[in-house]
Figure 1 (tube, rainbow, N blue to C red):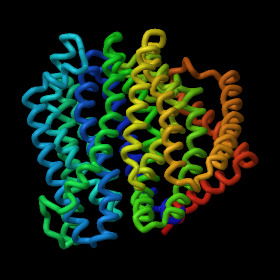
Figure 2 (figure 1 turned 90 degrees about the vertical axis):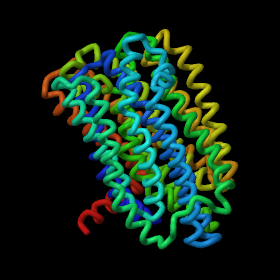
Figure 3 (figure 1 turned 120 degrees about the vertical axis):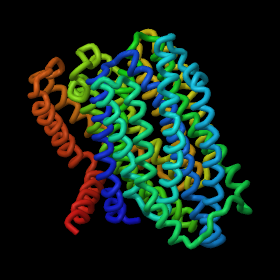
Figure 4 (figure 1 turned 180 degrees about the vertical axis):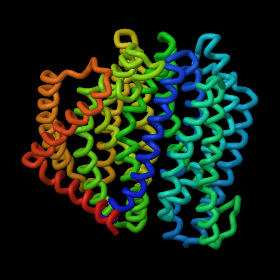
Length: 515
């Protein structure tokens, strides 16, 4: 896929992703304004983690496994066999989902116990988990639909599911603020999950008709694929372990710290949702197809271009997010029940999350590239090491830095994971020139250092960290704009190749919109 075609496909995903992310922010803003950082929101965040973790595991596993497996099966045994294989796999995943949902709904005490909350928060968490249980199954089915649709280049429907999901939660939270309590927000989660399925079903039915293949529950290579799924599933579960341990350690602090950490994580993950996922969504099937066809040189070329572009974008985001963490937290959540203390408790971990933006971009890109090359076992091992390191750092840093220490632990571990994956990439693709990637990174860091110097100088002359007035929006827009301009000017001299790559992608998106 050329840069122009990739940018055009990414633009479609980006539009829906941007709307979904904005609604995701609105969801957190409404939650903060309605209930603040409190025991009730801690219970809601913990309950929603159960639902979202299952969805995240399935989405990662299905997209990471199904797309390359489908491409390989189609290349070797034809279109019909490829469809039958994914149908059989999906059927058994659906059975597991139904059973898991039933267990969670009947015995919510088990997942609630994992968080080791006090009695008040534990009882509320159990009630919320039971209400959200249907969303567990429905989000899992939505993940299945997403993988199957993306195989054939249907990106708009899967990208839009976050929009309706967040709308459901926002609606439920507003009802809760009006008197329905936090339970209404939980019902909103289930309503949003129903809307996800309704949104994707028509497109999925049309795809099934186009395939002209009868669904089956058995396939000659189903057992083989299931064995390949184990390391992918293991890596995905391990990734969710850190989300759980973060909530577990934060729950040992004062009430509200779990929520503050969640708010900061939402802000820290925003660049990934707005930039990384729109790029990777169309890129991953392309790389998987190139690898299946034996065109590894072309696949590696796509990887290099994406890595350069993502690094170029990550640096100014890190600068702005780290230096202006307090202002960003204030703008995002500083209203209603989220007072100055709530903002401070959110800003401190956000500062450290900022330094994981670039490494998070790189890790996800390398993860998907290695998955296309069937290196799932190596990914799982690297993920296990990362999880263990994060937990050790959590224990060390929780005492002196509280929830900010959990964010610092995550940032350090993500960088370690990125370097481990880079080593795996080098072994799998010996033609990958680490020296060239290193030189590229150094150029971008120097350009970022110039932008950081400008940002700090502006902050000295025009401090805004204690502002709460409506003018903060305008002042921050000016500050961020000046920092970006400084970065682009520095990149013009220090990283011209990456600047040209970004310019090409922007032009491709603009031409798409004009067309």
